Structures are given as C-alpha cells and as structure tokens.
Image 1 (cartoon, rainbow, N blue to C red):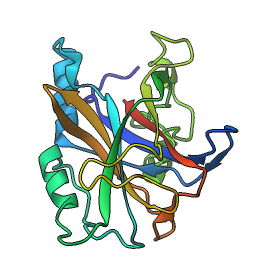
Image 2: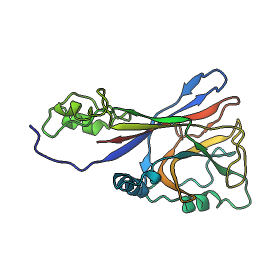
Image 3: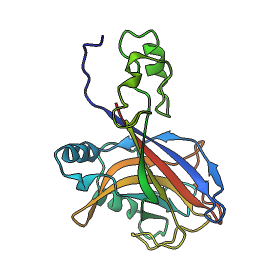
Length: 228
C-alpha cells in the first residue's frame, strides 16, 4: 500500500516530423522535451476552476533563412507572447526570423504515459534517472493502473497535433514558411481575449544544427503533455 502523496506534476515532449501532404509520407526526427512556461500552471489552475479558455488552442512555428537562429537564447519558464515577439523582431535591418501560427490539424488525443515507479520500488532509481523522453518510464509497478479511470488503456497524457503550411505568412515580417526555410523552435499557445499566451516552447535543433524544411514537405508536431 502506498501512503505518500505527491503534487500533480506536468511534463511535455514533442515528436516532430516532415510530412508530404500529398502522400502522407512522414520523415520523423528526434523527439525532444519542451519547457513548460509558468503560464501553463495558470492555465491548468483556470481549467480546474471551470475556465477552459486558456487551454492549448494553437501552435507557432519559428523559422528563418539563416543556419543560426539570430535571436537564439536559452529557453526558460519565463515566457509570454509580447516578449517572444519582441525577441524575434530584435534582429534589426534583417529579414531573418518569423513565426507562423496555425490551429490544430485535428482534435487533441487522449492517451497514456506510464507513471514513474513509486518510492521503494527496486526499479525506482534506474527509471527516474534515465528520464525517458517518451514518457514511458521503464519498469512495472503497482501504480500502472492508476490512470485508467477514463480509458481502460490509461488517460494521463494529452497530445496536440499541428502542421505548418507554405502559404500563410508569418506575423512579424510576413515571410512565408517556404521550402528551404530553417526550422528553429515551436511554441504551444493558448488564445484568450484576442491575445496569445505561451504555454510551452521547444527547440527543434537536431544534432546541434537547425534543419531546413524540404521542398514539398511541411512540419508536423505531435505535442504531448503528461500529468503524473
């Protein structure tokens, strides 16, 4: 029997891929952890209080035409929309960086991610230290059935899905997100009262370098938030 209680924690990760819209062909690249903003905790509190208007509603793709992101900085939990736009617009006299905001490509999906082992479990130290990116911590423990009250298969993870496009312009410099553009980062956004709110931000750097969007392909993101 477990008698200890833990705070409800949230963590997130992103599965990016290139997708050929015409054929559905996908070319995935490395999954990575995001950084949840302080605003994400406020959004969760509002939702529990009966106001769902701050839950994720859109995604933003940050892109440009340079190999190095001109405004690159360490991603922290202190994120808001106005400071993000100010940061991206700070490369004066250059047409480098823009952000395309899109709605979700289809409804978010509910699924399961295994919880971390309980304290005292023999696999606890190895699983918690490995920090599996997929949210599927190794080992089996007595808490595995805790998150199956909504779905029999588990329901402690929500995944948001969005795809870029080559037609819509960005909102800072009106640059289209065309083939050949470098993919820098992405943000998960709420939209309330005519304003965006940054809930999470992630770097899409791969192997120490930013990738270019192939001609004829778009960027698809499956963005998962796990509650445990």
